Amino acid sequence: KLYLAAAAAACWGELRPEPRAFLSEIRSELKAPGHLLIAEPKGHVSERMFDRTVELVSETGFTIVPGPRVRLSRSILCA
Image 1 (cartoon, rainbow, N blue to C red):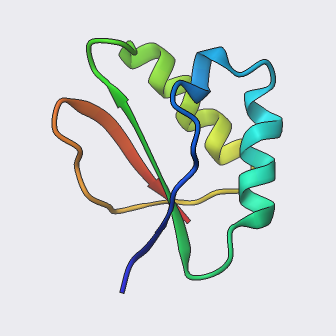
Image 2 (cartoon, rainbow, N blue to C red; image 1 turned 45 degrees about the vertical axis):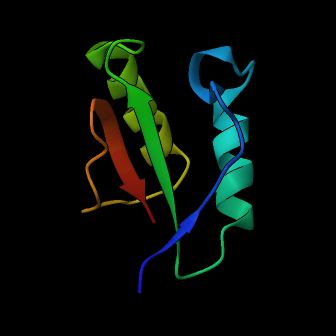
């Protein structure tokens, strides 16, 4: 089974003052076999900005794993 952790943060990326700290906090609270799904609308977030999100996710210790695609969005699944 795949369990997804829901992080209630509508526009978390560019609007969070410290996105690295936010991701670190989620990482510390996420229990195995939990996953974090990050999806940003393509019309709202550029590929470049999303690539930066992917970098931050990796820098905070998450591993990007195969996951579901979210229609009209850029998405990653993090373990």
